[in-house]
Structure formats: structure tokens, C-alpha cells
Image 1 (cartoon, one colour):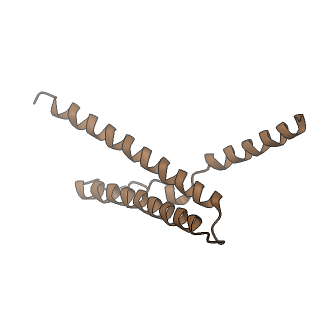
Image 2 (cartoon, rainbow, N blue to C red; image 1 turned 90 degrees about the vertical axis):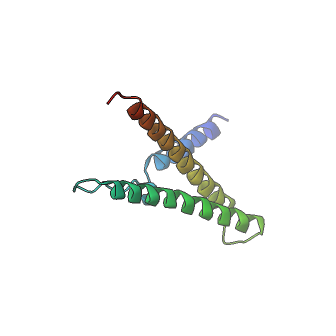
Image 3 (cartoon, one colour; image 1 turned 120 degrees about the horizontal axis):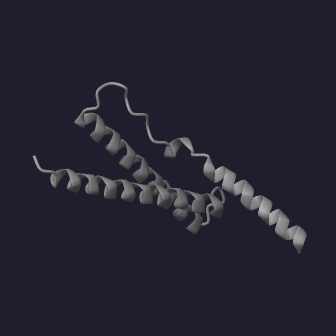
Length: 111
């Protein structure tokens, strides 16, 4: 029983190290060195939202494929895609909350 627990622990450690490395599709695009204008920020924000939407669409497609019994798609792939989409969405909600807080703080400053 102890050997089985040790292999499970090693597998969890392996999965944790894989989770720590950020895949390219979740990486935040680099901010340009030139003057950041409103259009640059809005383009970056739209790009980030499009990535989140793409991850959710991919998750939906993989889930549907698993439900339909497609042998090319495994349950693990669908679950990972769902978790990626969930994490990306949660991060987006947190960023939105911080932006709203910053906006409220700026609006409450005396001029």
C-alpha cells in the first residue's frame, strides 16, 4: 500500500510541475515599449478576452466530442481544456474586478 501511495505522490508531483509551466496560449502578451495609448490597452484587452473565449470554445468542442463518443478525443483532454478555460475565465474576472476598483478609486479622487 505504501508503494502505491509513493507512486501516486510522484504522479501528483509531476502534474504539479506541468501545471506550473504556463502554456503559450495562456501567456499574457508583452506590453509594447512605445507610449501606451488607450487603443493599445483596448487592443490588448480585446486580445486577452478573445483568447479566453477561444479556450472556452475549445473546451466546449472537446466536451461535445467526448459525449458523442469520438475515439480521437480522450476524457483527460476534455477535462484539461475545461480547467484551462475555467482558470482563464477566473483570471479575467479578477482583472475586471481590479480594473473596476481602480476606476472607482480614480473617480473618487479630488481634482
